[in-house]
Image (tube, rainbow, N blue to C red; front, side):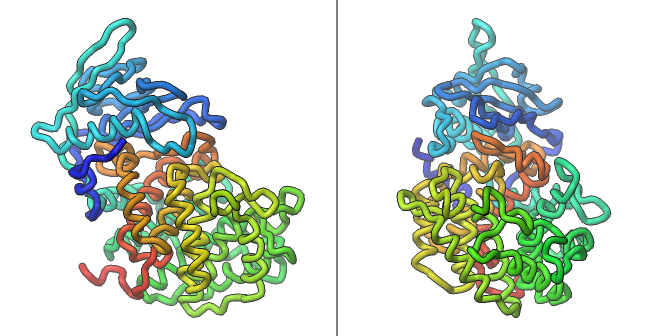
Amino acid sequence: MKIPVLFVLAVSSLPSLAADSAFPLYHPKLQNSKKGEHHDFPLGLLSATGRLSDGEREILIMDMGPGGPAEKAGLQVGDRIVSAGGHKPEPFSASTGTGLAGPQTDLALALARASAATPPDLALVVRRGEELVSLRVGLPGGSLKGADLLAGIATHLLATQQKNGRWQPGVGGDADVYMSAFCALSLLAADDRKYLPAIKAAIGFINQKSTSSIDLKNLRSGPKNWQAASTAILLAEYQLATGDTSYAKALKTNCDLLAGRVNAKGRMGHHFDIPYNGGGLVIINVQAHLAWALAEKCGYRVDQEAWDRSYVEVKASADKNTGALGYSSRAPRSPDISARTGAMASALMVRGREHEMARRLAGALVAHHGRMRHAHAMSSIGVIYGFAGLKSADPKGHAEVMRKWVPFLELSRNAAGSVAYFGGKRNIGGDQYLGLAPIGNAMVALMIASSEGKLHMCGGTRKGWFGVSR
């Protein structure tokens, strides 16, 4: 469906969200569907959880938040939304390439029109058993505006950060390191000095738990490559934004660890050993490349031999049909393309290398933007790196895709002023591992921040930008 121009203009400059504090924070009740049997997702300002299966036109209400707009209007679990704002949608498709087409986009457009109206009421027709019931839902007033939404997310992240600087993961182990790095990047992107203590607290926690365990004389010890890469990306972006070189040694240590773990064939794995019978994981390679490229901007001397070996593997993983990066050189064809493709496009642009390759990767992201939420069971890194790569290598394509993704933002934002996690149509187990609430806020924050181009991974070029305009 074509998005109305007025709806696009409300967020095209991406300045924020007006929310009604009378509505409490709601966390959707999402049931993971690894093979796409169903798709659970948040219903935006309604404070409810919906479900769709392939071919359906009606959104099934799975859960509602106490005191939220949906509950106050009389919506019930088990109801099916037949129409929103008087429009009946096209069928939902479980195909990843179709994005949000169908009932999700229709509901998002109806919510956008209703929240901008006076009074901000949404007309719904629901199927309740054998009957059709008409409801009118009172919503928080105010159009979707990116800067307000980013500020609301930052406020939420600040309130939920623990005293030791971490954010609570979905499980134990080392998930908190990886996820907390993205949350800290989101606070950095919010560009307000009041967040500086929280950012530094997060860095302190990450370095204490992860960086301190690195022993460059024993590359089998220390954190997983996922953690080392996210730590290096955060530390580099922090230094570039603030000019503070306090963490330069930690940045170098993490980058050196990644370089040391590139094997003779250019392959990398979760840790030191290479999984899948030695085939490896290109998603690790590309995050390492982005970390090295950003660190070089901070004065780090890139191990060119490790870069070149790894880059051979990255290029060999390119799918000849889509132009995107696949799982590995042994498995170049893969539908979940965005995280690998976006991170590498960003890395090449940051380092000023292989611009034509970067543009080809960005072209694949534009052509297959519907797949952006599908990446190694982690919608978060698909969105974060996908939009970063687009902004870096193809700003025009980035703007085009951002307009098409406005419904995603509309269904993500909640009535309390932050966002709910909105994952893909397949396995979201990786994000459940990280923690849906914090990583959901981080993925939307960094998607919005990509439009501003302050972070170097999102096309930024200016150093020392953090907090200077306030």
